[in-house]
Image 1 (spheres, rainbow, N blue to C red):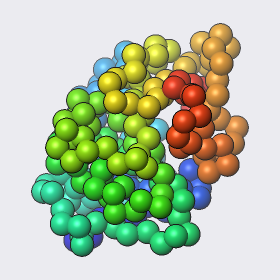
Image 2 (image 1 turned 30 degrees about the horizontal axis):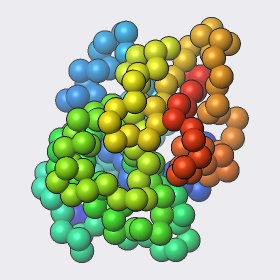
Image 3 (image 1 turned 45 degrees about the vertical axis):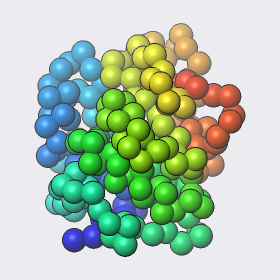
Length: 202
């Protein structure tokens, strides 16, 4: 089996994507049941049960492949120079340390691209970095677990990403939304001084 390259659409059109399925990830299952967490409003779970239902089996295979063993360099996806930006975990979340290492190694294999690496499991990423290092082309983004609460920035991470309810969004500076990611690039630009990304709930 080969790692599936996702064709991103909507807001993420123009980005490369490596995704997995939250429907087969025990961490996602547990988080989605907690109504205090933003995971209870997960757009990915909703889409993979409805409009993106056909993609669910392929993303489940990606979950198994990326979390099952450390992949050899030849088995990691390679992108052409056409692609400048990519996103890890637009769908899904890290399963284990192996998964985190494989994603970092994909970034290493594609040094011409900037990769946005979203996760709610910073400890796994920090452990992976301790083993294989942090590629310079990776922007680590910690997804705040709770709606309306910006979490502290974990060590080694570049930004936090926090989702706000429609009411709370009126009281904060929402700087995500209204543009395609490939046009905005706020999350993907190194050294731009932005450490806090805020989005209104979909």
